Length: 208
Image (tube, rainbow, N blue to C red; front, side, top):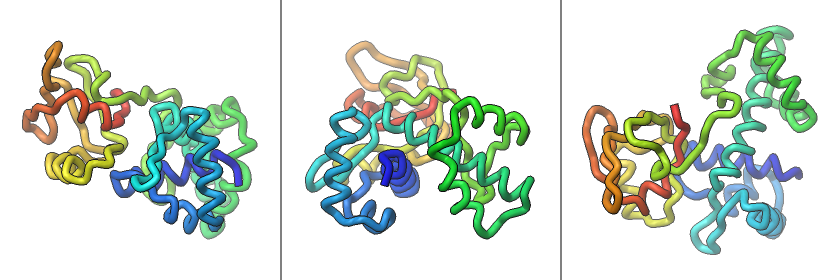
């Protein structure tokens, strides 16, 4: 099992659930043992692609998110190609998985152009854009806009509050004001809210 498979699956779990991924979830999804997952996580942690807490789970770093989205982009573009051009629908996911790791970045870009830059894969999921800027919300400049990727906090109460405020995957946010030593004033779903920089540092976004 390649490290890209782990990055891709961690991303999917975090994007789907807006929380850390569990070792048991990864083992089940990838059909490997828990020790195998733990061994790979240690390797990814050394490469600064993930952060890991024994009882909290694993989360991608900003670098890990960028690497995961690169693989996912290739996979989804291949799925579009198989379903739209080759008319292969039932096995498009399996076929894409076989090729995604060997498809070069240049070939993926050409495929994207040939397919006229599709925004969604056949399952309706958004296809990550090439070289999209992924950062922590706290690093987003004032007046800038972004889309939430997921929240990476292990604090359950904090996560519940952020969910209730609408800070979930695909939510649109705008930085209204940044205070030098205070909270960020954000606009989410038409309402202004204030969040401390430490909390904002756990929210990964794609700058728009």
